[in-house]
Length: 348
Image (cartoon, rainbow, N blue to C red; front, side):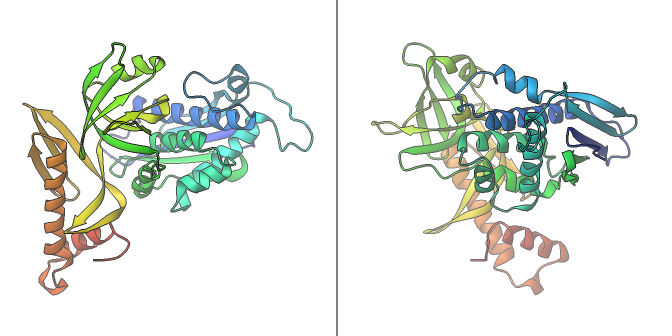
């Protein structure tokens, strides 16, 4: 599938017989994620300091820009290569572009096989947490969702092809949920208010209540685009209660859904092995939260109450299926019971 250390192969196949064609959006999304991953690896190899915003240096783009060298008809079978001739120093292990391809392949291998993805990527990048976060974000963009109709296979250089197992998508999403440092906090919710005056702050409605977030001037355009949307914010805790100061674009991430990371059993709070993704809609001043996989659905006027109701529903499901004798469950009930148990490393 891959012919040299200077090439990346991408193969996408549709499993939907009624729609065998490959969506242009799917191709563009994969292309962009692969190219961004190459830039991140090249930026690391060239020794540049991580930046909070802005574009990659010209040298990184020259060394790591990809071009399509082969394209097969039918299912999308595409080979990409480094955009121009490069020469590496003896003993360096190849050119910057070739080494970036190799590193990107190792990142894909880690995501395919390891349980703790983020620490492994941090170690690969010599402790660079900033680029590790960006790498995992691109993995999330690249990886097919669990219900995707597409099979995606990637080959980076001489490492050989890897089929991206869609069942690992929740683990990759979970890798982006990092425990904050003592002076930091990460919140997720809906941006409900925005002030672009000298205060430069916005308000997020979260499952813990409302938080005020302050941002620097260079992030104003980025922040404005997210008004009324779901976001995740990481930053330092301010002196006043419920104030978070964000410093970079990387600390402010749009979300497609709201991750539920813990379940409360009375006084016992347990961390989920992977988050339950809650779809969020807002209509007539009310939130609608739902997850079809676990048959969860609630409505409420604020996220705090809505998530508490979701937790109550999940707890009842646990009692009805996990705590119930298997002899009293149907075959489908036993399957659902095992799905619930997979949320925790061990039963309650």
